[in-house]
Image (cartoon, rainbow, N blue to C red; front, side, top):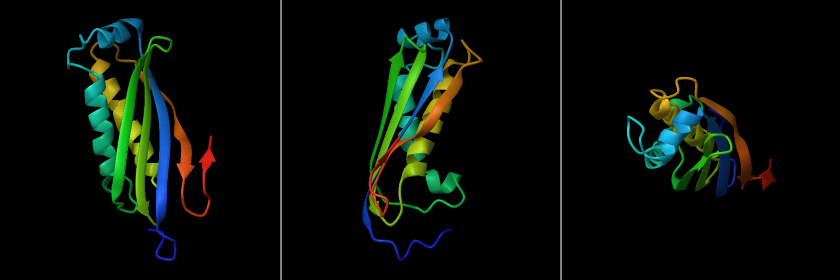
Length: 143
């Protein structure tokens, strides 16, 4: 792990986004709440929150952080068709929370795929990346 002991403790925030593209029948089943595994969006949000909290157990060199906020938004979007994801994570610590936000999006996205695979085995996760980073020496950065 990188030694962050000389860094200042500051408020840190990161937002990541991703989208899951699926077939029209899978989208229709998700929108109607008729997926074989149940209601989609609440399960996806919960999976993302749980994943953010477990990031240092999943990513070998991530520092364990005391997260103060995790929010995962999952929105059905007929234009994709699919689900848009946005994860925002905050903490007050010596290093940022980008990996926690990305992990939340990744696991939330994989959860969508798992829940729709009976209807669409080819659903895919796309466009995942950090969109906002705040705190630390570099200040605020947006993509």
